[in-house]
Amino acid sequence: MKLDLREKEEISILELAGELTSSGGDQMFREAIDTLAGSGRLAILVDLTRLQFMDSAGIGELVASFRMVEKFGGKLKILNAPSRIRKSLALAKLLPIFEIYDDEQEAISSFPASSK
Image 1 (cartoon, rainbow, N blue to C red):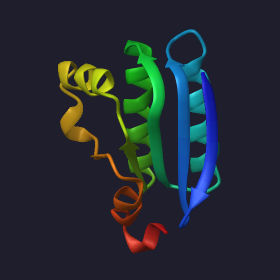
Image 2 (image 1 turned 90 degrees about the vertical axis):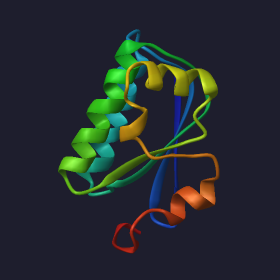
Image 3 (image 1 turned 45 degrees about the vertical axis):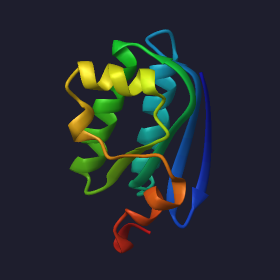
């Protein structure tokens, strides 16, 4: 998996590419979230535009990251989830817990002003 980080309007945007799986991508994602949260950056947008596959370990890591960020008073939201990823989240009955956006500016605007 490839992971890129950029900032926009004080929102941390993690761009994932490739596969979020138990073969390494989940650990990389966890470390990125831990680093962001540890530095107090708790407004996180996870861009899945270029994510090709996510297995149960990847889904688990996404949920664990969501809960950890929320526990510290932050928000983790999803941008551009491909239909196969949305289907996986729906099958796992997890779709309702995530805020998913198809427009980056709309997603950024959805964060509370205090997060930015």
